Length: 362
Image (cartoon, rainbow, N blue to C red; front, side):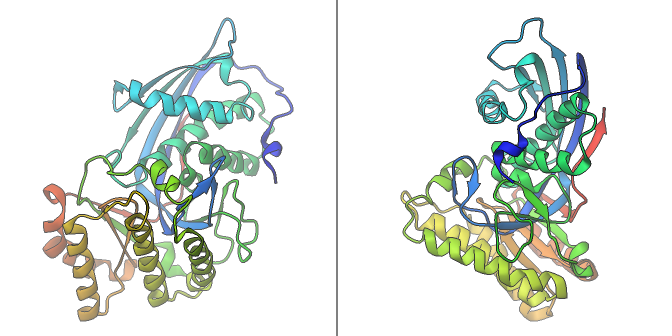
């Protein structure tokens, strides 16, 4: 498919006013997307677990304007308060998607959103927020075009989500989601995310993700800046090749349930992401001392017990601990007894692989 396939030919129905709500999850990348080119196209493919509890809940209210303009008319309310600082990012998103949703300037929109986790703390709040907003907008379009198929709805929602935040395209559907063209993944595309197209081993269908909140503050480096730093990065091309290779290696691992192979690739990917930031210009240290304390504790625990606990990181200090359900009791005990001490105010989030976004009202 190409971008032009998402431009509607026309609408069969009229729409005056109403509201729609969606709840969309965050996701945690196993093979990392880091580096892009316009418009929001990945420099390498990625794959992620869709989460369950870490979500953005968004309500979109719409009313038809008496006179359609060339501008966008919208209010943004986040966590119950107007957020003018967020509006420019939404306006940029609307500009990117207007050709695909030409009705946008016909309506005044009120966007009300909230997160179940701390904003801007490395838990991909932009992924859940933009996927939820894109799904709300797609619900509007489905009212204008009721004959739209479920497949077309979902694919276009992922396509639009990507234009708000690249990783948001992996938050529309559940389980394992691939984004980015890869020779070993049938149907994969740089334009949208797709469910992992092979049978997944039972071990990976119920995986846990516990997020240790080492630092709940705003990220030191925005994802936008981080991606820009990959443009002329001295190790950029090798990193993109590594990600392609790791996705090829991970594909059979996910099918046969190879936990040791999974751990090796996931941890290597996390450290490679941070290595890119350590060696960029300018360079950044995104980990905190307690991030390293957790990593070393995980390695020691794994050596001593043989349990299949591993870590991954996004572009921040917080640590995602990934482990199979069959070993969860012992691992939760380890988290509570030893790792909570490294969390800010002892805070952590228990999550697991989820089923994707859900419409909550229409």
